[in-house]
Length: 386
Image (cartoon, rainbow, N blue to C red; front, top):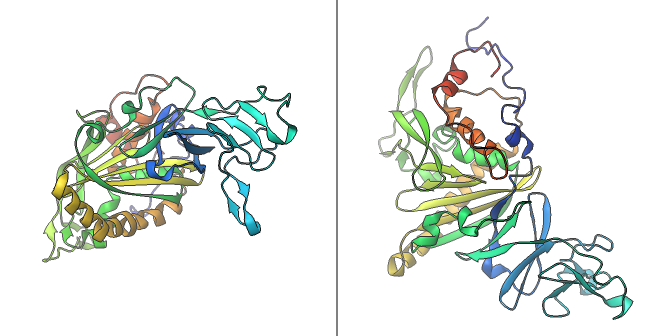
């Protein structure tokens, strides 16, 4: 048998990580960043998160979130028929309420209780006997956060990176809906190896000569619940037996770093330290095959330096990084079909992330840290599926 041909079909499922395997629609009992605060006004805003249809609406300055389904016939509360056959969102008939655009069933925003069935008259006997689900909502750093879960919610600050709450900063952001399960997207963000090949010729890295390969470890960082990988070896060009040297070294490119700059935390947040700013991303499940992708470019400064960063963001950072660079990832994510899979040494970071998810809120105690035994499992016995 050719030594270059794998002798194993690889892992056939994700049963090693049962909670992660079951989290097709995400990890519950966390706060998720739903949308920008400025987008939620008196007209309902429909958003799907973790497979649940939500409708957001602002009343007297406060944002509310309810299940986007009228209990009568299942019509979305965010929907009404507009003029000339156009679709639009129904405005509230009364303060503190939302009305279904089909028959006028009207619900109290704070409790989800049916307080009027307009087309049955003011004495409708069904009032007070029907209720739809409401969701805890908070606003921080210009973002609407919603809690989706079955446990009592912790303070929203528990699920927001602390530095975004405590340090002055300037940011630009983008939200998009992308193909692929959220787990593929989160793993892609924390995948150590793929940037060295997939992104090596991207416009974002046109002036940077990134390492060809590294050896790394993983650890929990001191600044909160972040899991990071860090390089223990950095190799820029190597001789591959029987093939030649890779990767080509370009004289016009600056030598990139191989240190720990990427970190991930529950439920689905990624932080990548760039040159003089940071990229924060959330990979939020929408349904089985799509995720809601929120990206922030953040510079911890204010005043004139903040305005200068904002100009940089709209001039090139948004387009080169948040669009072109991540579009390369999207192509791979939406084409991914795993498991089955066959892991290799750089996937130690993915194993650590999956183990971290096993200890997500509402489950058992967190698993032990990833150690050398995990690395050995990935590399030693190629005749046994891992």
